[in-house]
Amino acid sequence: MWPRGATSPAYDESWDDILLQRLRTAARSGRSPDRGPVAELRRHDEANATEYVVTLQAWLEAQGDPTEAGERLGIHENTVRYRLRKMAETANLQLDDAKKRLAMMIELAATDTD
Image (cartoon, rainbow, N blue to C red):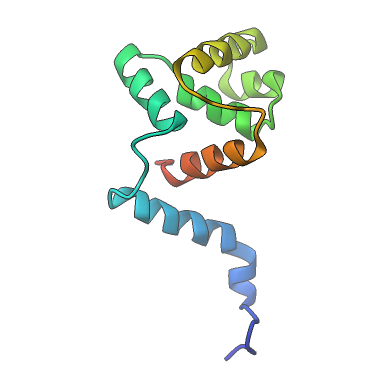
């Protein structure tokens, strides 16, 4: 047994995967948000065949760099910028708020089906 407060080396190496798996399990059981900017963008994507959610995810993963986000998506950086403007018209993204960005990243990771 590990001393109180200590974790196993295996957990230390994979805590992020464990946390995300727990979040995915909760999301699959119907405990994921149906409101908020990510949910709004998902509905818009489904209704309009847009790719706003994947664009948001790529932009967040690229830490706000439209060039890197475009490379991840295989599109031009100006297309990323255009989509971000259109997304802001669709949902209240507040991309300048670090806590909101973190919350969106967590929701996207928890509902990721890959």
